[in-house]
Amino acid sequence: MRQEAGETDPDERKARREFEKWVSHHNPVLSLVIYRALRLQSDPDAFKSKGLYIYFEPKADRQSYPLHQRYNVVRGVVEDLDSIRNAAIASGAGGIEDHGRA
Image (cartoon, rainbow, N blue to C red):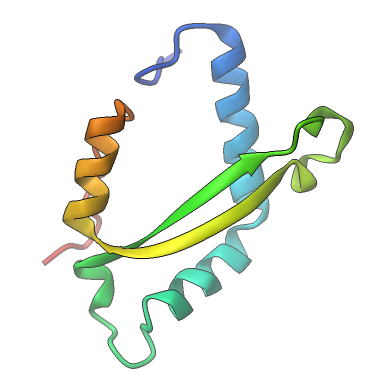
């Protein structure tokens, strides 16, 4: 099994998988949020230079909730991709991939 950067124990891997499932469950609404936040209806190429940085917070007793209710969105900020990339690298989370970037 591939180990992600910063994941040193099974609990971290489990938490990451759980969060990925949460994101997958909420993918339709997150896609709409990104579409609206980047204003893709008026600037279809905005995704090439901007991204939505979303801050999530796990609920304190998240294991007592169904998977789709275990995290709260704290806030979201539209940023230049370079700023998001630099923040990810500085945090130790690693870089972000460029998908469809011109």
